[in-house]
Image 1 (cartoon, rainbow, N blue to C red):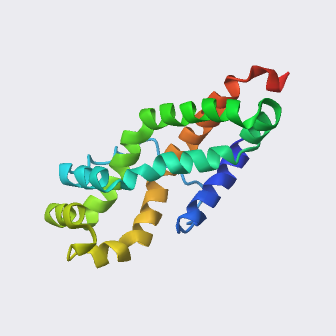
Image 2: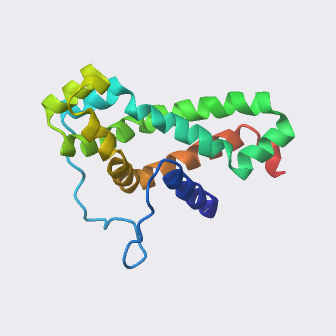
Length: 174
């Protein structure tokens, strides 16, 4: 399962334009003594929520969870309709559990690049904002930073979606 999640995360990174970065020493985990990330600014949180940038979390969980062998096996055995109902509930439950962390990660990334006034302009005026071109140019960098900041979160959330779905169909393992 861990190998599958790792493969899906690679696909996740590539599908949204992220680059996979090799970490010297082979470990991508932060040391246990690393300080917790700073809280994102209120302006950055508001920007992410108003623009819906955080909606990609549910989409990515649904996309990559549905591609797993476990979910595909469940569909084969119990039917698309039955599995889809449980799967959607698991995705929604997991987004409810981890969505704020995902949103905060995005807000930290955009808040580090743009001022509160620029973020407000982008959220209010969208592509009419004088900062829109800069935001579009920042998208690939933001994606790379988001992948680095949220890789563990995505792995944990994806595991919970698939596991929770499978637990509703216990006869699969018998």
